[in-house]
Length: 368
Ligand SMILES: Cc1cc2nc3c(=O)[nH]c(=O)nc-3n(C[C@H](O)[C@H](O)[C@H](O)COP(=O)(O)O)c2cc1C
Image (cartoon, rainbow, N blue to C red; front, side, top):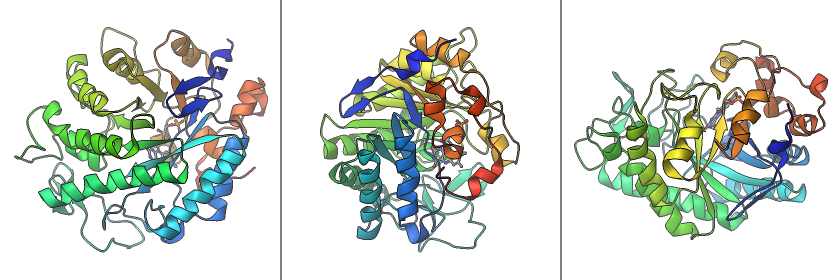
C-alpha cells in the first residue's frame, strides 16, 4: 500500500508541516543540570534534516522546585537552559524543520535511582503517584496557582524563542494526569470530584493560561493518555460519553491538537468500533489529532524498556486509518530515536534499509 498520504502537507495556525510525521516526545536525560548541550541540538537538527514534519522535544520541565526527578532532564526555565533551547530551535529551523517543546511537570514520582532529589518534596493533587503510594506533598491553592503560571511562562518563553508550537504533557501519570485520575486525585476542593469532568479542571486552567499568554494564533497541543505506567490497561474514560466530558472542556479552553497516546495505534478504544483513541478524539472534539504507538514496529515501548527488541513492520493499517480521516498526524518514537533518516527511507520506499529497535539505542544520542 502507498504511504503517499503521509507525505501531504498539514497547516494549522503556526504549523506548516511538509508531511504528517511527528517525532514523538522522548526523554533522553542528556542535559547535565537541566541544560541542553550542543549535542542535544545536533540530535534534533539531524531529525529535521531527515525530514521529520514536526519535532516534539523530550519532556522539558517548568519552573517549579520539584517539577523534575532527574537532574539530566532539560529545564525549560533559567537563562542557560533557555539559551540551550534557542540553539536547538535555530538548528531545526536551519534544516527546514518545525518544532515544539513538550512542557512538563512530573508531579509525584518515585525517587530517581541516582539518589538525586529536587530541593523540595514532590508535589501533586494528593501526594499520590498511584493508589496507596504517597511520595510527596498535596498541593495548596498557592502551589496550584504558581504551577499554572509556570506553565504559562514556559509557553510564552517557547514562543519568544521562536518555537512553532508547544505540547503540554497531560499524559502518562504525570502531574496533569494525576489530577485527571481518581486513583491519584482525592481532593475535595474544586480540583477534585467524582467525575472525570471535575478532575479536568486543573488541566483546563493550564490550557487557558497558556492560551492567554501565547495569543490565538499559536498552536497548542496537549498529550493525553488513557493508560498509566502503573496500570497499562487502564481506561480513564470508560465510554465515548465520558471521554467527551474530558476532552471537550480542554478543546474549549484552547487546545488545537490532541495527541492521543496509546501503546499500539491499531487497538480499538471502545467496543463496537475499530476507532482508536485519536479517532475518538477527533470525532468527539472536531479538533485535529495525532496518533502514536508502535508505528512501523512489531513491539511496544514498555516492552522496549524491559529489553525486548522490535522489528520493522508494515504501515498499511496506519495509512488505511489516515486515509479514512481518523486522525491528522502520526507520531513515531523509537524508529526516529534510532534513525534520523527514518522518514526519508519511508518516503523513498527503502524498507530494506529500516532498522529495528533495541534497548542499546537508548544509551546515546544517535546522530547518524
Ligand atoms: C526513551 C523514551 C522516552 C520517552 N519519553 C517520553 C516523554 O518525555 N514524554 C512523553 O509524552 N512520552 C515519552 N515517551 C513515549 C513516546 O513519546 C511514545 O509515545 C512511545 O514511545 C510510543 O511510540 P513508539 O512505539 O513509536 O516508540 C518515551 C518513549 C521512549 C521510548
